[in-house]
Image 1 (cartoon, rainbow, N blue to C red):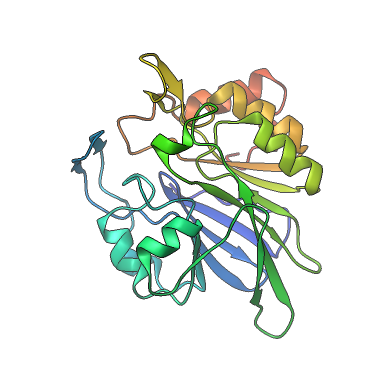
Image 2: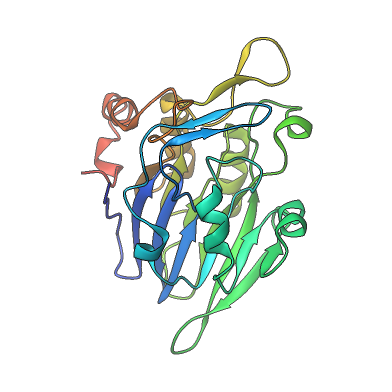
Length: 255
């Protein structure tokens, strides 16, 4: 899927598949959660099935200035080919725990911690880690640490990348701290038993994605994390329909 999302010549985003998005921002080339494997099953405490091959290989993506990795502990956010890809990346920004596990060029950011990336020709892009809650309250000991990101810079739109977040309280906190203009929301309505025997919502469903867009008042929204994996219970069409029903279809970058 090739989806442009731009309200500025300084921001362009394209969903590769799942949570993997190529972002051009302020002269920098960034990539979220690299997943480039072929279809198959990943064994573990909770087996995950990739249903289709990645439409683009890591080699076809090419060089990036940094990877924004929401978390490293789930194969649908960092798969085998993605891990190989990280070895050739000059910088990976991720959770503090993830940086410790990955080593190499990985740098951990705690929620609301920021770092600066130099822009070609001068100036910087500031990357601020945000909170992300990959499930209901109390789920972090089971699902692990997750972060999102906010990108800012002089003359650039403010961009929020949610990562695997299911909490509208987290989105509200981001909206209180930043005037978000562009949002990349991970959705897909992943539901699994985490803290009870009942399925818990681990990522935004279509309704919460709509509410997140309202809270952020973002002028443009790109939906990611809605395809290529069997445990995603809602696809892009479901989310687009929810935005249309709420009168927010014009904000989607999928038009």
